[in-house]
Image (tube, rainbow over all chains, first blue to last red):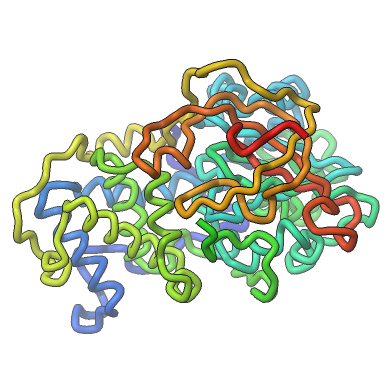
Length: 228
Length: 218
């Protein structure tokens, strides 16, 4: 991503593990305690490096980018802007990739991002039943639950049951629309703006936008759940 | 292929388990696998769909029994072996024993810093789109033994074209080494009852992203 490193100190429901060992070329626990899996991955990386196929420094930067730069805070800013700027929201719903790139302050996303909007009559949920397709450019890498058999199998047949696992119970009359990401199109949900946020600016609103609310399995935080 | 990866609508996997403050990678090796996956994708031997197909081909007990990044790790090793980029002996010893094969591109740190972006899968159209928004379509009853994006739960079902998403690389062709064969892609939406029968939840709609060869007029 071309944008600035972002402070992750606020709560978007995405944790970061800056505290533990991410070094691949050293091991704080002692190399004799490598698990078989760790050893296999290390062997693979060594072989690929020795053969000149990969540069470990490039791998470091990829890991670093996903741990520090690319995350749900990007999507949260997109949603907050959609909440405050009706013209932007209209463009976003027409072509999310184009709208985000044209804005110039929200980072860059590649082709095929599609934004869908929750309303009082319809709410959206995103899944990839076949694997793990996810809008990583705006939400970071998917959490384990998104890739789990439980989520992938049930979302398309019992989305309300899945939502219950997330503590979400939409009104009975709300239509549930599930988007199965079976191609290179990627989806982001624009949740409904929480009540009591009149006059909030984009930055304040972005604090309310959780990762799960942009996948469609959660709600944004309420106005009184953040300190202003 | 009708693999266990195609799990939409299956029962028995239990509730969704959530984790608070989940790290991006739970262990350092997961990040290395993810990054190797991306870097090796640029070597010029396979595309992203072939990577997905390799994971789907894992035996069902492995697919369901190991973690996500372990699946990708195994799929990656399988692909590297099948293209002769590494040998089994090299993986076992953890060192290069044979000369490297030529590669198209080796990813650099500077390139990563310049921005990680997804590739575009848009391609020039090969002809006019056969369907338009609002058209009723029936998905075909196909059961290819290779990679496809038409999930089992949505085969031989009547739905409505909601949007045309442009002309895209056709994964079903790419994985067979038959080239990109660009196809129109549509969002096709189904009523819950069409997919799951009369007991389906009221007010449920499910859409898939369907390539034109999957569809016929209904």
